[in-house]
Structure formats: C-alpha cells, structure tokens
Image (cartoon, rainbow, N blue to C red):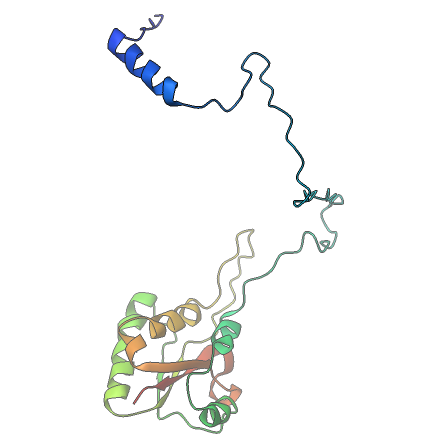
Length: 196
C-alpha cells in the first residue's frame, strides 16, 4: 500500500512563509552550495591535528604506550590518597601500627545486605561509647577459579565499606579512613577514626 503525501494547508503554508522570511540563510548562494571564502585572520592560528598512526597489534605483543590505558587506582590507593583529616601525629602513629584500635569488627563471610546494618550499628555504638579508633576487617577477598574474559572484582566488602563509611548516616561520625597496618590486617582491614 503506497503512502499518500499530503501537501501543506493554506494556513500552514502562510505560517511557513512567515518563518522563512525571518530566517537568515547559512549559505549565501543556494545554487552552487558553496560558501564565500573565509578571510584569514592573522591573530588566530589554526592548529593541525597530527596524524597518529598506530602500529599493528597482534595477540601476544606487549601494548605500545599509545594503547596502554590508565588503570583505576586500587581501593587502598584511593583511601590512603585522600587528604588527612585528623591530627598528623596521631595519623603517623596509626599508619605505623603504634596505636591499638579500641574496638574491632570482622565482616568476613557476610553478604553486602548483612554487613551493612552490622557495620552501621557497630560504628554508631562505638561513637556513642566515646571510642576514637576502631578496626573494620573486611578481608581481601578470595581468588576465583574462573579466569574468564570478564574480570570479576575481588573483595566486594573491601570495595564497599569505604563508601558506606563516607555516606550517611556513618559519614557524620567518621573523621578518617585508612588502610590498616600489616599487624592489624593490612589491605584486608580499615582503621576508622571517629569524631568526638
């Protein structure tokens, strides 16, 4: 079945003519569809984009610098790279493992749904008790046997706990978060320094 084209009504055509009367054409000469030559301005230089030729890549070759990509920082780098918001002397002692945490919680083996309310309750109780430094043990996560093409994030709790500690309601009582010293768990645990 062929479609039938409708023409513009007299009212639509009158409206269209009023609109086109107010428009300025982009191209001056509609017949040739060429623009007038642009005058060169001495003050502006046009930068030419260099042609980047990438070398052929074959499976097994090491990537060239052009093909190498920046990896996202690890959780430990992200947490430890944040600005220090506590007293610097206390911070130095803490990261060297010289201060013993006043309380600790171990979240090993918990699901995200179970660990979040347990962590929230623990931090709020520690803050109410006047504790300053607590240890949250998340574990490093376990290696999976499946090394498929899609990467699987290792240590889901380790990745999620800093976000929980910085967002409400815990963000109001947490002053600083740092990766624990090796004797307190290393990358598998966090020091959480609470506000007064």
